[in-house]
Length: 117
Ligand code: 5GP
Ligand code: ZN
Image (cartoon, rainbow, N blue to C red):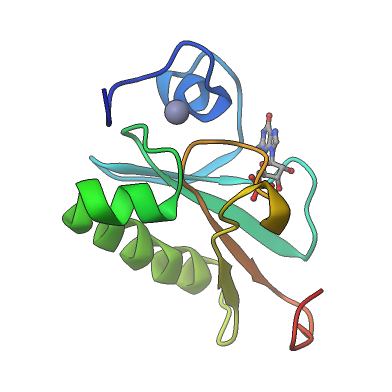
């Protein structure tokens, strides 16, 4: 069921503390942790604690939770003192999504090209 923890989901395991992560922020509804393979000096993933497979499913099923995730991206940027940063939600395998638990990438701390690759 949407929102329920999934046994085979890496990010549900991070939420449950079963897989270690460098957690930078936690709220009642979200966790933010550093990406294991950073693409920029700041590369933090902000996830809802509840399992939704991607950003679109999250926004459709739980719009307030989607807003919590977005709000936390700004909090992460503030914590790393970024005045410019990029928020990325890879959605679908063709766009590079590899973990099927909605997550926002917060990238910053270097120049970011536009358009992205
Ligand atoms: P996606 O490709 O789905 O948009 O993003 C998944 C991200 O999760 C990738 O940037 C990848 O480096 C990161 N990732 C994969 N496994 C782990 C892990 O075990 N711990 C952490 N902190 N990040 C991970
Ligand atoms: Zn999950």
